[in-house]
Amino acid sequence: MTWSRNGDGDIIVNTPEGHNIYYTEKGVLIDGGTLDVDDRTGNGPENVYWQSTPPKGTYHVCFVTYSFSPDVSSSDPVIAALVWRIPSSNTIATISKTFTSNTGRSYTCSTSHAGYMKTLTIS
Image (cartoon, rainbow, N blue to C red; front, side, top):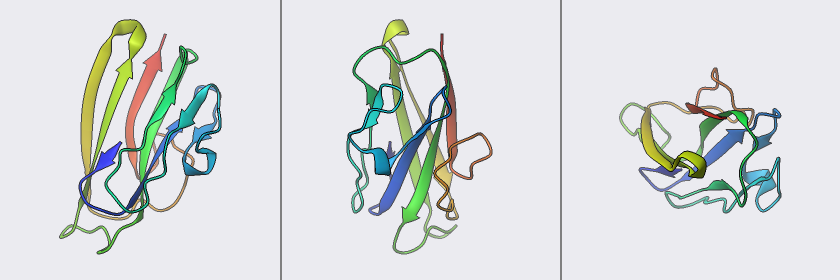
């Protein structure tokens, strides 16, 4: 995950087991996945990855606009870009979303999260 201007943005990945991978678990394996870095001042990237095949199931990916100066607004938006790769199907894709207000600081990612980006299913 990257974002368009310097600040503290955060990626969250909700796993099929219902666990959320984000900055407090940096370097810790959660359902086999881990966050590589918590970028608090730049524009990313923050990567959640699996060294082996991720568990099958549905994953939700969200973005948190933790701290930006100036604050995120319609006049100072933040564009988050998500790139994902699924090795088993050799799929690489990108999606971006423009945020014109803060997402709040919830680190439980779901389709109703203000920073919801994408649902991925691995079968």
